[in-house]
Image (cartoon, rainbow, N blue to C red; front, side):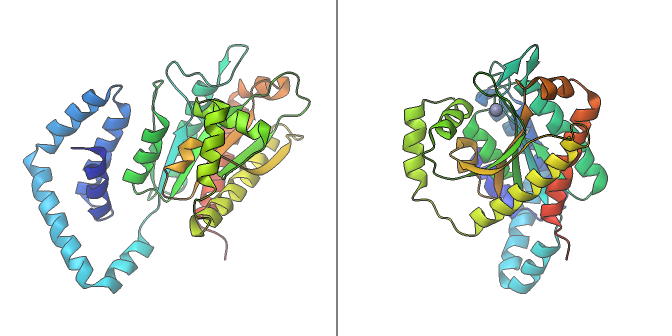
Length: 303
Ligand SMILES: [Zn+2]
């Protein structure tokens, strides 16, 4: 079974059904597999189970019924619990930023796991998935595909920043996808994407033709909520944490995602004050709480 057909099956599966849970577990298994072939193997054996086969038939029947009752389907969609996908950046032999024994890939995973716990605690109905829950490599395309397959309402890629040379102020930045010709932004995008600046530049040109409709404005709302809340969380420990604001850049991991998607740089690894704070439970918990609240504020805006 390919990722695409798994994605289709999940999209068809009724929310909250055992079948959907099984399919999402498969998705987890896929993201946990180090090799594509291994994941395919896991998928195949589980999908061979007759139980899932019969549930798929049931799903088809429900899907047919649903097209006959569009009002009921719409109602169901509005009432369903949201799905959140958290994407810890880098992993495996891709460390991301490093500074004095700290590794971006480790910290991003830690923040994502904490945020997952907090989201589940604050709203047990929310489905939360990580694109990786261990220290292994996942391709940028696969991260976005996993979010699409999970039918995510929100995609948050979690990173830690660094800067070349001496930097006076670090801080929190949230990025939304956009074409950018700013040299420094292109450089950062090249590093996060693992490609050359020239390639990012080409990517930017491609992006210029992308739609800037509803998804972009939803991504901006998500970014603003996440930025505000992560900053508030961080400032509970570092009162002068700098607000670098919401910015636009050509991050490849955001391109494939079909839902509102943002990339958070939660702090700077090479700013001494932030690096030392990142070694403490208190700061990591504060950032994770900020990420959690930012997502919840976006999903449930105050009326
Ligand atoms: Zn990164």
